[in-house]
Image (cartoon, rainbow, N blue to C red):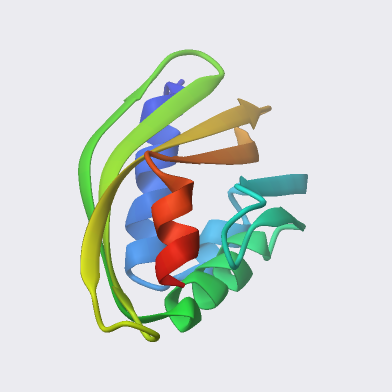
Length: 128
């Protein structure tokens, strides 16, 4: 059996390839993405198709956005992705980078929730 880090790594690999059908079959029917409420695409995104919807909203919020995954670790139920997100503001033209930790919890081998943690949501909100 794969640990949560390995399962999460596969979901991120599929998402980076924009294989949303592959992502959706690995998500629990009650899957929820939790984005910080203070950012433009914040809130709870529910359903197996939540990841492509939140990704589209995130990329639409910026003139440019680039994800760089640093490490993925995991145990039995939880996996954590450490990444950098470089965003360019449509409003100011400024580019800045945030470190994020994205924590995913699995149930019966399916991703049940993904909690997104930015280093500084105030900076994200100010540039959006």
